[in-house]
Image 1 (tube, one colour):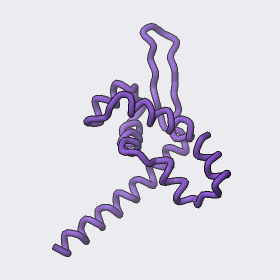
Image 2: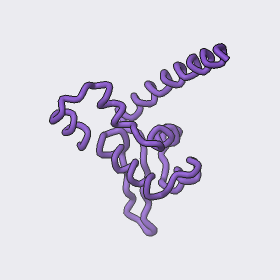
Image 3: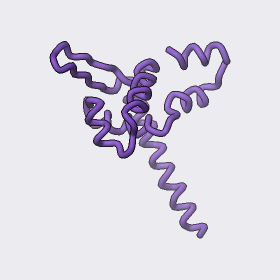
Image 4: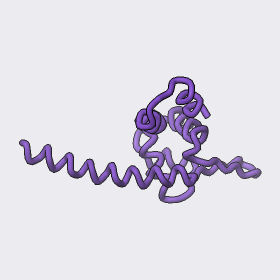
Length: 114
C-alpha cells in the first residue's frame, strides 16, 4: 500500500493522508459512480465526462492499492473486470455526503456575499 508506507515513513498527519488518498481530478467522481453498484471501466468512461482511459485506469489502480476499491476479474472471453467499493470505500462515501452538505453551506454563504 503506497499511501500507508508513505504515511509511516513521513509521519504524515491523518487529514493529509486522507486527502492524498482521494486527490486527483477523477477519484471522487469514480467513487460516486461505483457507489451506484459494481462498474466495469467502460461504464465509468461513459458515466464520467472527459476522463481519459489511461487516467481512469491509473486512478482505479491507486484506489485498489489504497483499499478503497476491489477488483473482480472474471475468467471468460472477452475478459471482464468489475470494480466495487470496499467497506473502507463505503465509509468514504459517507464522508463525501458530509462534504457535499458543507459545500451547499459554502455556496449559500458565497451567494449571500454577492
